[in-house]
Length: 172
Image (cartoon, rainbow, N blue to C red; front, side, top):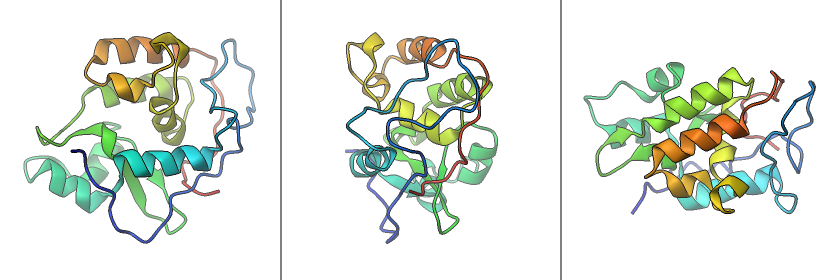
């Protein structure tokens, strides 16, 4: 059983438009799109329901005292978070191996690939939960047990020229 959603009373939301964020720069390869039938907000609600969106204190408790605090892990891009309107940062639970009390190492690898391409945390995290043709229409998050495959797909999907994304916030 994965981490549960923290009872924060806040509904996660994103500012991005439906069908993906409008691009401010040209790309040679299209960004992984948000499904046309799902708004960005729907993607985040789905992530919250399936994996939980954990506050830093829940991440700290899950990883234990031997781990650096969530804020330090995020600053080092070992985990990725999304901001709320209330100014809190929430971390999707799929980034963590709860049984082993550790961060999945592939998160940092995919974060580096995505950030190098100019994507923000919010876009990288959503990518994990969007079906990919390269994975037989399955989501990268469904292949976390095969980090080499997920990283290889990320290298292809995030291969485009530097672009600008909206801020890392979970607001509509």
